[in-house]
Amino acid sequence: MNTHSDNKYLIACHQCDALFDKPELKQGQSAKCTRCGCTLAERKVDSIERSYNWSLAGILLLMPAILLPIMGVTLAGQYHHASLFDCILVLIDRGFFMIAVLVFLFAIAVPVVRLFGAFYLTYSFKFNKLKPSLLYFFRAFHHLDNWAMLNVFMLGIVVSMYKLIDDTEVSVNMGLLAFILLLISSTMAIAALDHDYIWQELEAEFAD
Amino acid sequence: MLTNTAKSSNLALCPQCHKLNDYPAYADKKEKVQCVRCLGKFYQRKPYSLQYTLAWNVAALIAFIPANLYPIMIIYSLGIGDPSTILSGIGQFVDQGLYPIAAIIFTASIIVPLLKIIGLFLLVYRVYTGVRLRPEKHSKFYHALEFLGPWSMLDVFVVTLLVAVVELGFVTSVEAGPAINYFTLTVIFTMIAANSFDPRLLWDKKQNSETFKEENDNR
Ligand SMILES: [Zn+2]
Ligand SMILES: [Zn+2]
Image (cartoon, rainbow over all chains, first blue to last red; front, side, top):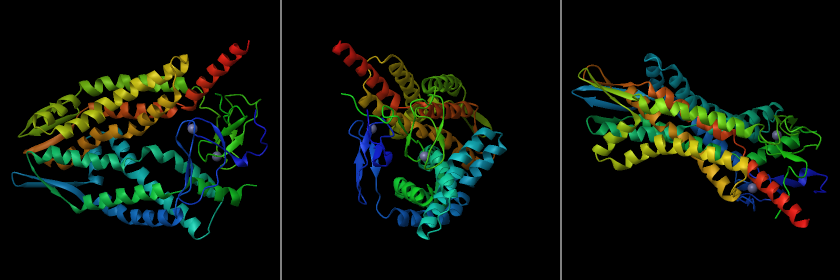
């Protein structure tokens, strides 16, 4: 059916498998699949620079966001607050090991690994320290996409505040601010990462 | 109209790095090829995609039953425990007049998991039989399901936060109930089920039935 011998100039839609000629994109442009309408290829503006800055900001915010108390309650003269890390400890303490592991993975481990991953990648590109191991590294990186749930946890904070506000006095702590900033930086760091560009560069560098 | 696909041109797209690889026609469907760019091994289509989706989906449905029967949270005040299930927790929000919050939790904990389970059953059925298959519509539906998946974890995070924050000794405290385990399993299972489904099968099936029709017309 197809007579192209070199598939370098072809691109396939990852959702419907339709085959197209590879578009030449400038920064900020994207191409859509004419068959199913999803994004075929994209060139992001200043990808490396922006992702580097956001991931660096995210890494600095990690400790305060995880360890500082997010919110507290006061009732009948008693006060108690909890951080993200306390949530995990409490679950272990009460014997909910599976939930503790999963909350740890989705709300702490996966976001942390993704932030450091984005930082390491963009650092290597920015200072021209490309290594063949980056191929494996970036390949593994893709598997984490579905399992980072900082945004869901943020909504969870809002909902639990609403739940508490009726019968108790709810106070907001510094940890919440750090968590919101962490959510913004890690979202921006991942959104700025230009996968097509990174793969092309890695291929040009290491493929034979 | 028939579209040229990577499959029909003996090519295959690497799911990790989106590089087009040669996929020789003699290669068996169940054989992995190695990507020339990222060196990862992959299949042209996810093998046994429908079977895996179905299996994880059944598991999710089974876990969803105890998730709704057992209490997800027990609120203790002055030593007296008040257990609530997912649905009765939503009822409390309605009683308090917090309708937006009730709607958010109802959507995340009941509608989304059910929609995912029923939706994936439907997609598997459509691909299997090819009856009234509209890939344009169905692939958009699949993306919506995939996107909504993680948001079902909302209630688990809410309970976790409440257990951690509300710990005022005898005055009031919150404990998690056994339903939280089953509910988390439901969410994880539906996410794996959605991951197992290969949306390209929707288009393949459509293409196949159109090829068949054209051959019949030419006769
Ligand atoms: Zn497409
Ligand atoms: Zn690859």
